Image (cartoon, rainbow, N blue to C red):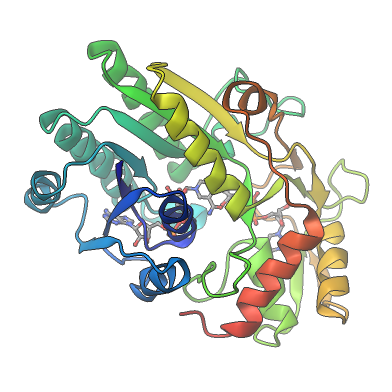
Length: 335
Ligand code: NAD
Ligand code: UD1
C-alpha cells in the first residue's frame, strides 16, 4: 500500500514515515519544509534502510499536488501538514486559515479527482477548549479559543461534510493530546524554530544549557500542585495509533473520531521532576504568571481508541523523558 504523508518532514510526520516504512508500506512525502528540514527524511531512510519518495511542494500549489497524485498510485493519505503555533496564529490569523484550511481543501480536491478516499487527519485536543471535566471523551462539546484551534475545528467539519456528500470517503480524525519524546535512536525528534513554545522542548533546552531556566506558567491552578496538568503521549505511540486508524479505514467506517492520549495527566512540576531524574541534575525553574489562553487540566479518556482500534499507549513517563533527552543531547542544535 502506498501512503501519502503530508508534512512528513515534520516532528510527528517523520516518526509516522519511519513506522510506515517499518510496517512495509510505501511512503510518499509532500512537505514545503516551512517548519522542517529534509535531513529528517534522510535519517528516516537511514534508520529503516528503506527508501521513500520526497516531493518538496506546498499543498497550496494545485499543480504540484496534481503531479504527485498523477505520478503515484496513492492508496491513502495521512495529513500532518499545517502550521501549529498557537501564539503565532493569534498574530497571523489569515496565514493560519489560508495554510491550514485552503491546504486541506486542495488536498481533498486532489484526492477526489484522483479517486483516493482514505484519509487520516491530525486534529488536536485543543478542539475541546477548556473542558467542563476530565477525562475527556470524544463526545464532549467542541470550542476553539484561538485561530489555530479554529482551523482544526473547521477542518473536522469540512471532512464530515465531505463524507456526507460522498460516502466513499473514509476519514479518521485523530485528536492528539500532548506528543513528546522521540524515536529511541535519538536520530529524529522535535526541532522547534527559535525559542520553544511547548514545555518539553523548553525543559530539554534548559537541561542542555541552551536556556537558563524554565518559566512555570502559574502555580495557582485548581490542580494538586497548582501547575497545569496535561496528557503527555510518546510520539511513537501516537503514530502507531495512525497505523491502527489506517487499518480501520479498510473496513469502510465513514468518519471516525478518536482521542490519542494515555489517559494519565502530569503537572508541570511532575514533568520537571521526571526530567531532573533522567538528566541527573536539577532543572532550574521559576514560577511566573499564567500564560494567556492556558487551561488548568486536560487529559484523555482513550477507551474508544482502545476498543475500536485495539490501540493503547504503552510508553511511560520515564521513557518519554529519556527519549526526548537522548534526541536533545545528541542534536543540541536540531537537524
Ligand atoms: P511540524 O511543524 O513539525 O510538522 C508540520 C509539517 O508540515 C512541517 O514539516 C511543515 O514544513 C509542513 N507544512 C506546513 N504547511 C505546509 C504546506 N502548506 N504544504 C506542505 N507542507 C506544509 O508539526 P508536528 O508537531 O509534526 O504536527 C503535525 C500535525 O499535528 C499538525 O497538523 C499539528 O497541528 C498537529 N498537532 C500537533 C501537536 C503537537 O503538539 N505537535 C498536537 C496536536 C496536533
Ligand atoms: C499547546 C497549545 C495547544 C496544542 C498543544 C500541543 C497553547 C496555549 N496551547 O498546549 O493548542 O494543541 O500545545 O501542541 O500553546 N508550560 C510552562 N512553561 C513553558 C511551557 C509550558 O509552564 O515554558 C506549561 C503550560 O502552562 C501547560 C503545560 O506546560 O500547563 C504544557 O504546555 P505546552 O507544552 O505548551 O502544551 P499545551 O499548553 O497543552
